[in-house]
Length: 145
Image (cartoon, rainbow, N blue to C red; front, side, top):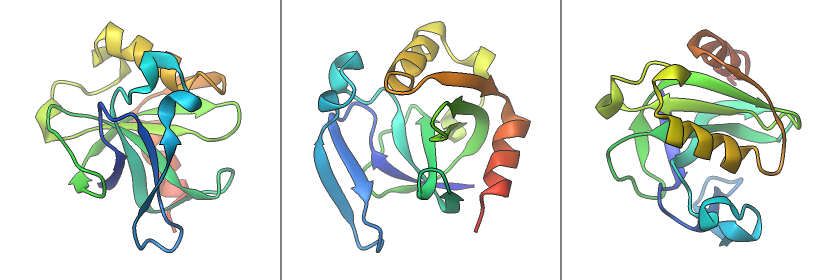
């Protein structure tokens, strides 16, 4: 499965693909919206092409755990492992790239990173469930266009 990176790990800028897909827009510092981790993205953040989260109105968001460095707009191959369901419907899929074969599910993610993911992505909206690979894959399938 492919993912496109909008905000690389370690970046502090909010970026989003333009709706016409002609490039990315910078919509300001992350810390203006999420002060956790000093507004620095803890994982690679992007979207899954050819999907639609109807509640949000754009592609499904994906969090990528990797040892590699990615750039804005880079397309990468990933394997979904977790679905984070939020109370506002802006659900997130967590995936790994080929460098993280040892992480197969939520329980394999180091506790420090799990806590940071929960704090960061649960800051504005409450996390209502953390579900496994099967639910993540079903969510993607159900929201493919």
